Image (cartoon, rainbow, N blue to C red; front, side, top):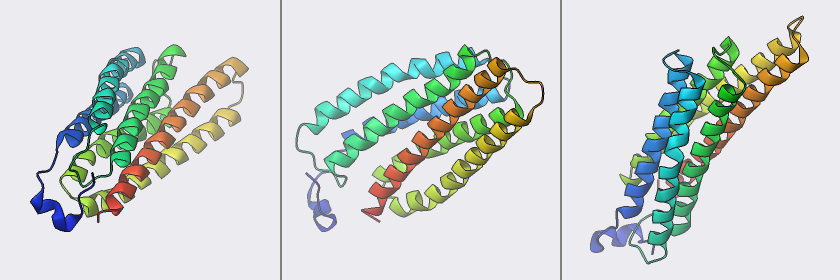
Length: 213
């Protein structure tokens, strides 16, 4: 049950959905830190992928908890369908983050090229900063979310530019074998896909915030 703003003081708010989504956001932030750690040379791609993969089961459990909770009427300012969509978006984003760093591990990227490092850093920073916005939704800081979305959009544009530049450099490099080119492009594509999922998740969060701003 969505409580109209003017009636909210009369009803005790149910904070359980927010608590679940904030825990999911923490997992997404951890994934972002693992990806940046690989870029910084603090760990291997395999180690980073293992960390992110280990986060996924926890996110799935949280999604199930959220769905069980949403089966019952709740006194919350956020619509049930929006809460569910956010939970699924965070879970999907974690999966895409894992796919991107796992691609680097499987294809033997021991040290990322400059272009791939730029892409991965943008993705990692986006995940961390985006995760920090989820608690703002349940603190009623809707305008702050919308404003922060603009900063995330700049990161996404930088990531896509890094992707385009990396592909251009890849195809213009003389003497590169076809298998090497295919391997490198596969990783670039996986990271770009994850970035697109992250950007769509941020759009969803901003849309939910705009309903209340």
